[in-house]
Length: 154
Image (cartoon, rainbow, N blue to C red; front, side, top):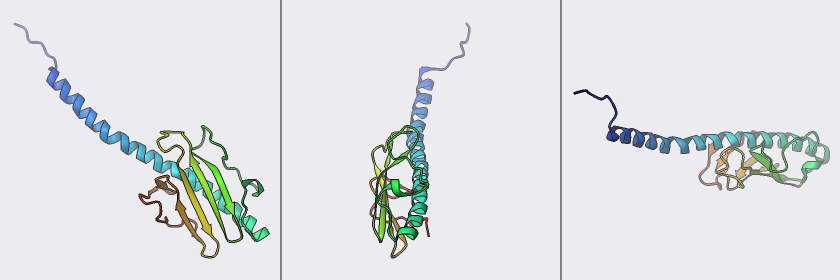
């Protein structure tokens, strides 16, 4: 009699089940981390626009309501394949301005089409974030988008 060294079907099945459970736990966490890092791009766009708005306000006494009137601002304004966010709306007046960014399908694309807004109020120098994108700039998850995130500009 000879002895054959091999795995039984039960051993293989146990390994497949364990790998499946590990994948089920790891994949959502990976997507979560990717989305948190995507919000860093939104923060960069907000920072670029804030600096340009500050210059515009010092010259004209009001905030710009169009990206085209801001000088030296290069932010994506249409959905493309090379960015996570694009500027979908910019409104401004003498006291406030609001920037709205929309998530593109780049990367996981799970949040594509969702928006994140930043409103800056000149009278209080306060910045609030809103919109239906679940991650606020800086990677902070905000389950309730009505809660303002701490201002990174102060």
